[in-house]
Amino acid sequence: MRRYGKHTDEDDIRSRPNRKGNRPRTHIRPKHEDAAEGMVLTVDRGRLTCLVDGRAVVAMKARELGRKAAVVGDRVALVGDLSGTKDTLARIVRIEERSSVLRRTADDDDPYERVVVANADQLAIVTALANPEPRPRLIDRCLVAAYDGGLEPLLVMTKSDLAPPDKLLELYGALDIPYVVTSREELESGGAADRVREHLDGKVTAFVGHSGVGKTTLVNALVPKDRRRTTGHVNAVTGRGRHTTTSALALPLGDGRDGWVIDTPGVRSFGLAHIAPSRVVHAFPDLEPGTEGCPRACSHDEPDCALDTWVAEGHADPARLYSLRRLLATRERKEGD
Image (cartoon, rainbow, N blue to C red; front, side):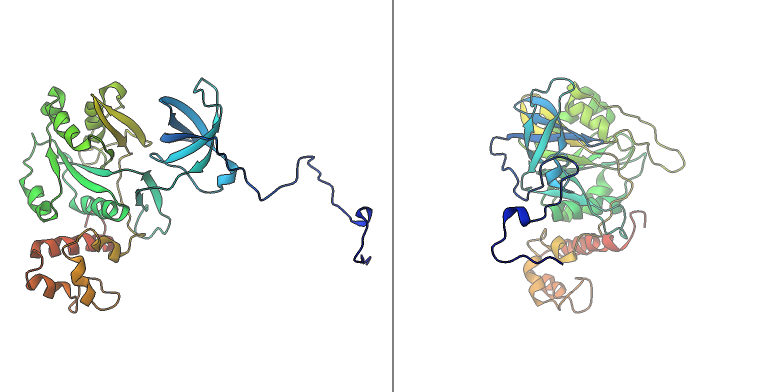
């Protein structure tokens, strides 16, 4: 083997030729200081539609981002053709830090969490009062995901012309969740949409709900200029509807209001494998101080849990502790249980 001394000549160094004929790779990445700011409106098969200076720009993720994916609601930096004209393509070179994330897993045994929406201020949980019947376990799971991700929950109950909301309101009364009750007739007249808009003004709100509850019908009433296809069909046997929204889409609230509505695909399960019980307790500031006396790794639903004493001493309403334990228990059972 040939050995080189301390003072080798440049011609003595063997260099492997670059067969592809392109420049050698470097770890130094451009900073893209002149990149434009944008917001991801929707994602479709690797193409992302972004709002840049008031116009829609189609972009793709730059290779340098690796596996990091942008989702609806993300604030991103873009370079390239930002004209927004047909058949043009920009590049997303940076995804800014997120203020909130709505995550879910496919089921409780799936370790892979999916970010559904980024940077939303509020999660509107849409549920029908009848046809299909309410699914409290799914509502509970959405609440846990909202509290964990930093989103404020809003409960929107539809089809009040078919059933009263009293039972559902009683179930969630201790959580002090803002709510709106709507009917089909009110949506058609515009009165219900106006009541919902009052909760959306100045906020980015993600709408979530299982199929057939009228979520997309509600979104269409809120943003009539950007109507999405609806179904109105609910299976008579299963009580479930057919998916009409296949991808998340951000729409401006309009009607003179500053806000965004993000319509998401209907869900049939909402896995919580990625959420630890300790993070759910943060959504209960009246109960959280009482956990200081809990044993290590307390599930908050066992004989030695300090929350029982905390509530007995009058620091919090017993109904709040019941609600907390019900939400924590949703991580251990399916929505239909």
